Image (cartoon, rainbow, N blue to C red; front, side):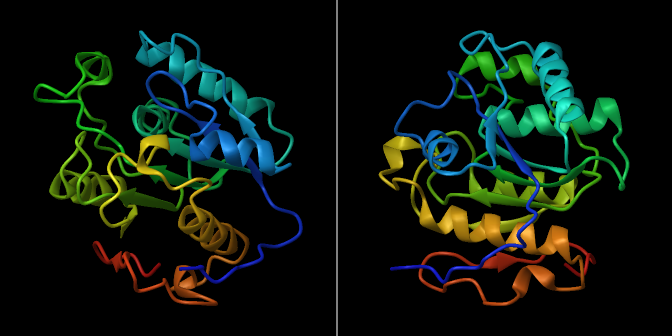
Length: 221
């Protein structure tokens, strides 16, 4: 099913791609977006197979500082926790350079994670993000139950979106360039440009086939 296109404002922020454990391979939607969009740049976090929390946070902080315009972070898996830790440690403030974040499939990092290397980022940061964010979770992600994803979204102040049954939302999910993710990104960019109440519901609603917004807390957007 094709998702309705939303064309963001002409002067879009820089999209910083923040991969997870092992980097994102060529077939991963993050890599496809990087190739297909001229507003994308991947953050080279290094130590992809043996991630180190503070190293990743420092690399992300440098990438944000080097950007010549506002930034929207597009993170997957452990990269989401790098973003959350960056927010907790750097305390960017509501008017900082990071204008928003799309957080996709953050894994459990506490309590015996599926891959022990994820535990290097434990405990899970609990501070609310200083910028608007969408957290996208799958119903059958082996790295995090949907209930745990709901908890992360609540703690971080993110809008939770149910992506359906597509695993860890990666190359193995068979989603190509993930058109639905592009739709969510466009909505986030619209909200960043015009942060009005309920702006993430405009100008078109979410397609009803596999996903729906789940409102968490009193935040109007």
